[in-house]
Length: 509
Image 1 (cartoon, rainbow, N blue to C red):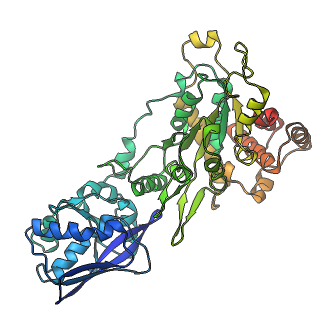
Image 2 (cartoon, rainbow, N blue to C red; image 1 turned 90 degrees about the vertical axis):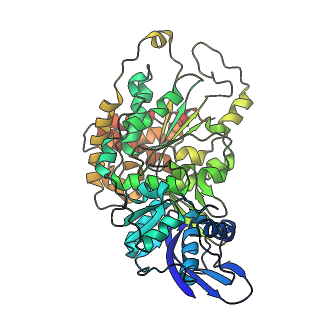
Image 3 (tube, one colour; image 1 turned 30 degrees about the vertical axis):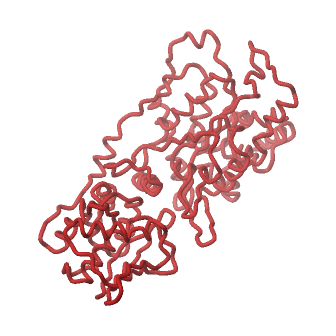
């Protein structure tokens, strides 16, 4: 008459344990699901009814009540279909299963009894290991994803009948296992390489500094100068993902429903390039049941915003807090979730609406008021949070005709790794890993400037109208440049180069 089965629901990037309680009693036939279910869960009544009948079992003509506990937590996704169907079969005596305490299950049921994939299985498996659940039944398409958490026995299920046979002890289903070392060894090389880039030595150097310290970059240049080409190659000079980072990235991608079938773990750093028509919710995340946005999908990777001034003002301003904190909190009337959002922002834009202001060969056709209006589309607070501003000029005839022959990504990546190792040792047992995240106390400790350096900073503040936040960014970039040179002290050339990367402040109308 009553049974309880363990399942899970998603809450941000985490999973929360849910007890699926099923009670059957005599009375007029009814099938009610309570416990703040969403529309997809409410509709599971029809899927479960048809799935049971088409799997060769009887659907009871009784009063059926399903409670999803805790009852005060909103729940979404059709992942409760499988535990609800199993609970009905056990409560009506059609199936006898013992030792349900150490078993959890999730999965959507089709009308023919097939078990379909659901979102967020990596988070579910991780929470199972923390809750002491030893066995997890999952859709076969999700099995390799869940098996990344090796403390849980993951059983791949293709149909309701197979799940019943396994739980009843009538059939053996081998658990799924993955070899993390093999997955990372198959990562392979990136298709794009910095050796493909012609010219743009200053931009190449600036991007190396950006990756070494986790700094944000704004590239300003005419159409066709190579801004997008440079940005697309940025992941190729970033260090390989660590296991913990790969799990975080895969987790977010799975919750968003973007993890390809059969993929257990994403081992390459993400590169996201949303269109400029994207909404604020699409960029930072949200919805009735909040989902991660592009900034979270870029976690541990690169977010490239091409044609930066064309993005909605509200969307760009919503980046302020994530750029500072490395995470974004999304609040709705009944739920507040926090998504990780630690990424490198790469913005690209033209110097003016026509794109040729300051070009050596093509004159600019923009009226002064139109130019000022265009430049003001990117606000000062957003610019202050972008550490490096660099011009990307149009290539000369000689550069265009010359064969590519610059340093390859592998050589640059080795320098970046050495600089990041220095930072890792510097910030050991601290919350941050990169120079870009330094606090005021850490700036005072690790970014001490000589009297001659103080003088050049004072000149930069007067001439470039640099804010307090902009000054902090200069010091952080200078610290990264010093790390690339394996220098313990920030020397005058390091500060001069960091100040040079604030070209926007010099050109600000």
